[in-house]
Amino acid sequence: MDNLRGILLMVASMACFAIEDAFLKAAAAGLPLGQLIFVNCVAGMLVFGTLARLQGRALFARGAWGGMALLRNTSEILSSFSYITALALIPLSLASAILQASPILMTLFAALFLGEMVGWRRWCAVAAGMAGVLVILRPGTEAFQPEAIWAVVSVLALTVRELATRRVSPEVGGMQIAFSACAMLTGLGAVMMAFEGGPVMPDAAEAGLLLGVVASGTLGYGAVIAAARTGEIAVVTPFRYSRLLFALVIGAVVFAERPDALTLLGAGLIIASGLYTLARERKRRKMLAQIAVPTTSLAPPVRLDKP
Image (cartoon, rainbow, N blue to C red; front, side, top):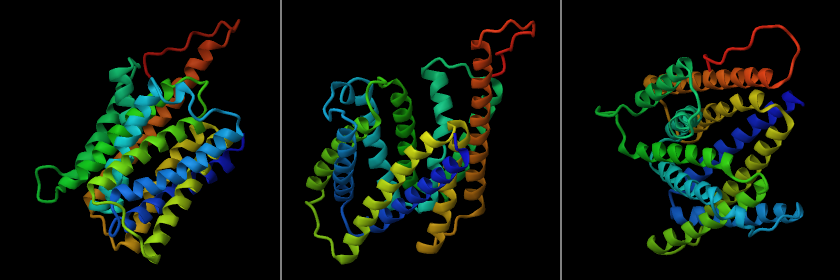
C-alpha cells in the first residue's frame, strides 16, 4: 500500500473538515442552524446516493436503516447537532480540541461496553486524555464556558457512532450508510427550521458560505475514504490529529482566536494520549496476528497480558 499518499490524503481531508467547520461557524452567524444542517445533508444525499447507485447498491436496503445502522445514524444526528451548536457558540479551536478526544473515548467505551481487554498503559493514556479535556474545560473556574458542553456531547455521540459502525453488517456499503445518515439529518434540519421560524433567504455572501460548507465537506469525506483505501490504517489514522492544527491556524487568522496556554496544554495531552493509544492498539493487533499464524517454531508464545 502507498502509505505516503495515504498520509497526504488524510491530511488533506482534515484540512477540508477544518475549513468546513470555519464555513459553518461563519454561516451560523446569519442563518438558522437547522437550515445549515438541511442544506448540507441534502447535498450529501445527492452525492452519496449517486455513488451508492453507481456501485449497484440499493438506497433503502434494510441493513442501512435498522439495527446497528439505526443506532449509528441516531448518534450521528446527536453528534452533528451538538457540534454545529458548539461551533456557533465557542471558538473553533476549542471545539476542535475537544473533538480530538474521540479515539481515547473509543478505548474507554470498548472496555466498558464491549468487554475489550485494556492494559494499565492504555488506561493511563485514557486518564491523561480525560485530564486534557478537563484542563481545556476548567469546570468550576471563571474560565469555564458552559457552551463547551455541546462539544463534549458531540464527541461522546461520535464515539458511539464509531463503535456502532463496527457492528453494522459488512454487506452494507459505506455509501448506503452515508446516504441514510444524511437522510435522517435532513429530517432533523427540517424540524429545527420549523422551530426556528423557517428558512432564511441567504444573501450572496451567505450563499457562498453554504457552497463552501458543501464543497469542503464533500471533498473531505472523499479524501478520508481514499486515505483509508490507499494506506495502512495504523499508519494514516494518527494524522487525523492534523485537523486541530488546521483549526488553530484558521481560528487565529479568520476569527482572531488566541487559545491560552492551558487550552494548548490540554490539547497536547489529548493528542499525546491518543497517539499512544493508537500505538498500543497497533502493537496489540500485531501480537494477535502472530498468534493467529500457524508455526512450527519452538519460540515461546507471545504474552497478551500487556495490551
